[in-house]
Length: 432
Figure 1 (cartoon, rainbow, N blue to C red):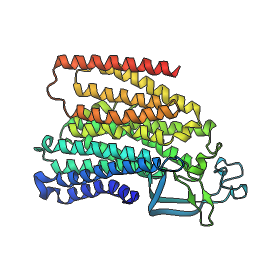
Figure 2: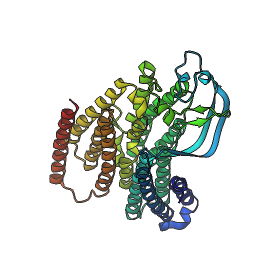
Figure 3: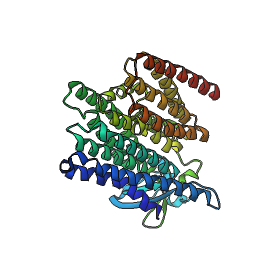
Figure 4: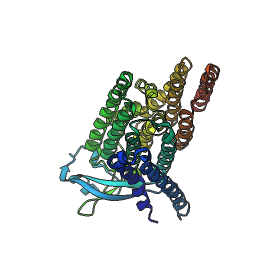
């Protein structure tokens, strides 16, 4: 089957499930979970088949290369001659395939709903859909007596749709839009039991802190447009047949000087890092994640396992931008290692198991940031592998909290502390 058709099904089936639950969920009653379960079962199997397809496509290539295919689904915005670089503009050096004569031609502002297929996308979609299915299945009994039963499953499906689109789109503006959509779903799930004053307080707190990161991403996207003259990841063709290199396209990747460094490049990377720190709860914007313990346990598991790793995805996807700015990479490592150690220490003094696991999540993602900050292929591979393993074991932990006493809690806290210290010193030793 066409891989692009599979990709479209993966991202849109959760949306269909959410809309169906919104429209007829009250009529389904205690069966309101059916659209979500059916949609996620289908998307999980499709995501697994897509992952296998991309793996075999890479292995059967005559010349080994990453799978990097983009399919436009719908043209959203087109503004002709929206940007004309000046003679001293850094965006006027777009890539090796553009001759110097055409280096300063006007460029359109064109946003198409395009989905990108590569091994990274397939891996992230597999994680998101499989964890989403586990959470939805667990929620059937956990939320059975809740009056907001249909609303909960509608929000779960909508969150999975938003995060799936976030990791699938091939444009920084669309990344920002679905970044906001994930933030909105966070707010609604964190405040699901809105009758409790404490829940409302914590949901507003998480929303405000994430707004800081969203502001950084918005400004970063604006600077990317001014710097590179495009927001597309992929290469596109102008009406006259000229190749317009995308920010993460093969043309620009093949050009050694295709990325802007210095102060401007560092500012862009730091703004993206600000967004990642807010979404992934890194110091000093980590304080919202422990408060998610007040939302339903399945929603908490989904947030910890998938959506807080969006910051890891953003930095990993923007790796070429960070590689051109060594100072930004060092900052990523410093924030990651500091967060990993500080969060582990804070977790040892918590008397609520859910908060211990929350600080454990903050610490674990800190290790992912530290790996990304190395700027090496091994570091990026380790970060994504740890993202995969963390998503599964943390979601299972958060959905199986019954039966823990003070003794087990103390042992778990001690184990978290010593394991974090051991990993910290191992990472430090490897780095030096």
